[in-house]
Image (cartoon, rainbow, N blue to C red; front, side):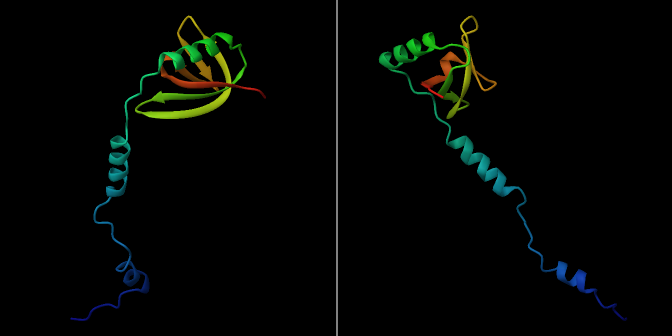
Length: 110
């Protein structure tokens, strides 16, 4: 029985790295992300009043820096805002936030 000589390309493929646990890294990363989730802390009455007074002074197009809570994490963003009192929400750079999600907000001068 005569074996054909293996091509150089096929021989090199034998030594390529093999991922026996395909997707394990992504699964671990997702699990860590889920594990780090927290619950939103309660605002003090003083902080709630501060946010409320700032929201009442905002005008359409004011530039703000807001810290908000969503899906178990605190996020920060800045941009022009539009306040919608009737629906209890504020829109910052096309991101609509419920007023109850706001943890901190600052009015910025541009």
